[in-house]
Length: 138
Image 1 (cartoon, rainbow, N blue to C red):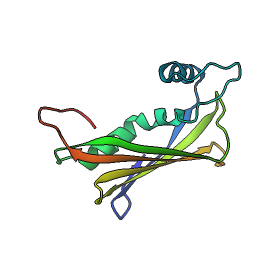
Image 2 (image 1 turned 90 degrees about the vertical axis):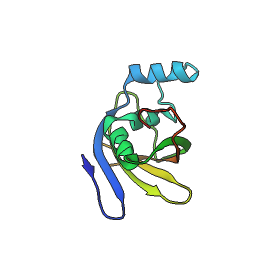
Image 3 (image 1 turned 30 degrees about the horizontal axis):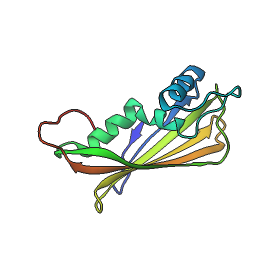
Image 4 (image 1 turned 180 degrees about the vertical axis):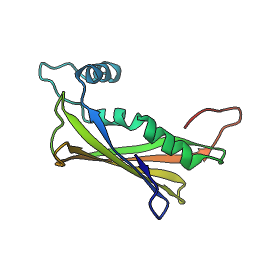
């Protein structure tokens, strides 16, 4: 679900996401996260959920009509409690475009199915002119 409240902010969700054991294992391999006997969710793993189609579409909509691309500037994670492998969560995202410096601020909140907070994450995407000859999605 995507909403466009006042002030140029877009809200997405809640989206149901799962801390899937196989996807976490692949993430661990791809990022060089050490193997452990204990099944834990790596701190930055929720960034994987930020690639959901609804979120990527909202980013493209923010940039539509401009000859620009979004470049990852920074990301932060504030945990209220650890995530558990195999559990489902609700992800709600809000994003807004900032003028100075030009960027998208993407804020994500993750809760348990019962509504208990687990994580707040912020991603900043700098908006830069599209290099000559480069096309495609942000």
